Length: 345
Image (cartoon, rainbow, N blue to C red; front, side, top):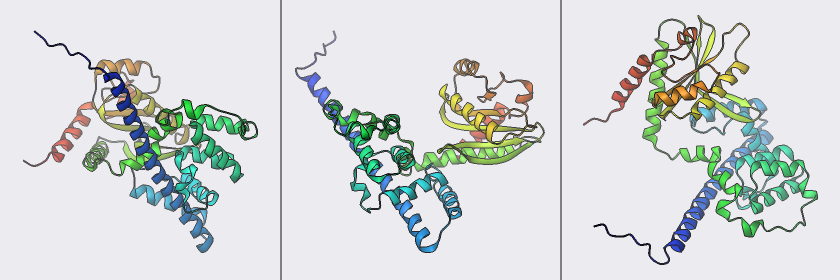
């Protein structure tokens, strides 16, 4: 005989209160991290600005600085030359050293770059920054209001946003939580052992592909592409000198997910547009995953026209298969490296 699990009086109200506490705490924690990231970017921009004014640093130095910072912090995607230029502009626009105490520090970095890129007047920037925080505007909403000159129309307009949008549930709160720069910043304090294993796997795969017969040439890892100010990094890039085609390789340490193909297809298109020449064959992509459901892989590949493989790439044409290593070779590389990483007992 089973005992009934009756819900006690007041349980629903207590659960609702606890959920709200969790949401508020998460938002508060993310907001603090975001403020620290903004402070960091302001400090970098301020240093660049001072060095340019006092020691005559030129734009070439910013490019060198971007390369050196990316080399030291490969997990962070915010150190492109373009982003460093935004940091300099940020320090110039908000020259107060206590910038973290200002309303702009509550905005995700993407919002700040919109203010810097689309507005020249500092007073107008500060108005939009305050409105974005107060109303919880997403980046797209902020851009829309700037394009439509909302500051000339809405300065006196009444609103119930503050009363109807809880702080932890607004669009702005969601964007701070998912902001890639914030996530990269947090990764500095993540699981170092897991990152070390991933690094070792990548190194092992590079070595394995270098030895796979004739024709494979290693181009680079974390190859950077700037797409209208947005940074993207290809995990591994090879070139098959016999077939004259680039091979883009993405590494995922978890189980295969259909959305991974969209990302890889995007990278293949990038390489095709930015690097491929007229005499080159079509660029192909290879996704390496720790585990996969073959049926899910086949359904997912059926929806893509880009030449992509997921370890088992028998659906690809023979010419493209010849440009890629076998699944057995790749599995052996992964297994060998896993054995190398196993702790001593």
